[in-house]
Image 1: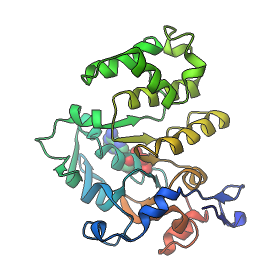
Image 2: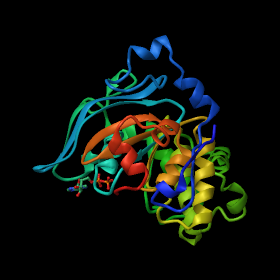
Image 3: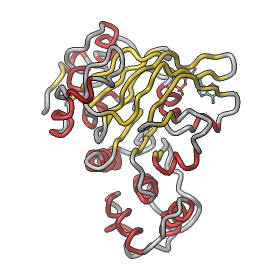
Image 4: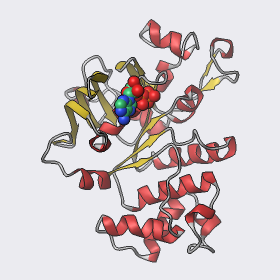
Length: 293
Ligand code: ADP
């Protein structure tokens, strides 16, 4: 499904083109099973991989995220958008306990992943990060060879690092053809876009269920950005993706669902096609039409 928003009403010059995969459209259809689990105020968007309830994050005395409840749909791309500093990255980092690594950070509420509350002290964050991978804004390969970058993560996660698995991860990340003859070259010899695809390959290599991406294209040029966006759409056939982006056009191009955050709160979460054409809340409309931000 593709539709356009009036370009004159957006903060950026090109029209916002909205992507919606057929799978996500089918999943968004009402289903008896999912209705019982839907978050308050959220339309039924199909089976959820995360059920987030009243999630909040404090950095010392500063409340960065508050009262977030939403269900993140499976095998689809969910974009998190909103003005800078509204808590997008903070909320994303809760989903694989990365805030544990931030001194003074405290997370409240509940995040069900399957039957487990992943915020519980009983959940091993290292094990969890094997199931929920993360790709960061700036490509961060290890200072090792291309091949070692993939093998290291596999070994840490108890997966046998075979040549076939290395090849498959690189193929899945659309990088194999560019590096197959130089697997022993340093990862830092790759271009920025290639390094980011290597980081995606490294995340895929440990066979996660979910991939979190925090502004994965913001350090890349437009051509590398398009390559990563194409890759994300392919990955959504097998994985659940949650992507923070400050770029509304990117959210519209790649995502099936969009969550709009403001001042640490979730304002609205719905099909991307709905958020960008007929949002429920006036403030969402003001943001997506560029009246502020
Ligand atoms: P966004 O991703 O929407 O730009 P962030 O999640 O990065 O927003 O930040 C939300 C709020 O939390 C901001 O006020 C920011 O200054 C604060 N913040 C983010 N990271 C930290 C940190 N490590 N320590 C203290 N405050 C932080």
